[in-house]
Image 1 (tube, helix red, strand yellow):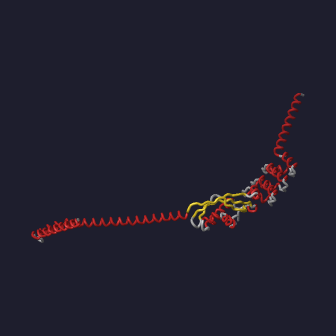
Image 2 (image 1 turned 180 degrees about the horizontal axis):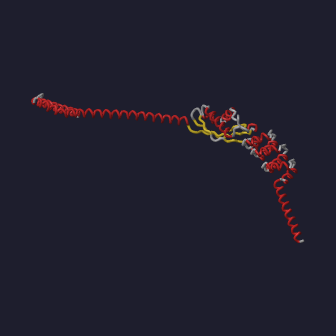
Length: 331
């Protein structure tokens, strides 16, 4: 009897444990609490839809909670569109926040457009905010040269408003800054004198605005204000000085080349003279041999030799006397 009671209790305990396990698995797999929250928030979604999200590896709370927020804001959004955007890697919360902000600001923005902007990598909620509250983009210091060669440095503040229709495929802030910088350089460069720009800095803003710099961008330029303007270097004078220095270096190089060529020619002439002297010395060294050969062969007599020596001595004496006279005259 006792054994039967014990067996019955064990069976009941096993059944209770199995029921608890089944219920816990059921409530874990089927988000009943989320369904209850959605139901009392006015979101009509079935348990089967939530289970289907589980099977598709989609966290139901990531879909239902933004849907509840959209429903409370009065937006009519399909749950399948939200799930598709989530599976595509989009940020549902950001899209819903952007749609709510656009609705409050009376901006025409639909879910498909907001989802496309989000998937394009842009912050759609921030874009809506910038569309309502314009944003100020400050450019770096831009240096330009007037026609008189004086450098002018300017820094501008560009007030822009997001253009929702051009957010997909439109250029960003970097393009705006680059185009404004190009416009400042062009305007300053077309001025005859730098003082003209300093006296009328608003002329830069007017000229730049006329160029339609926001074409093809995700923004609409509202105004361009010159925040700071200053005078830089005298680039024209610097360029002239650099050119003069370059011309001087070229002239010096050419002069050095001519001097080197003259020295080389002089060295060649000295070498040639030394060769000639060597040949003369060599020829003079052969004279005694020729005289000896002439005496030996009888072509030159002894008296002829002495007469020649007397003539050479007389010539040497005359040269010495002539040189002494010239030195005395010099004194």
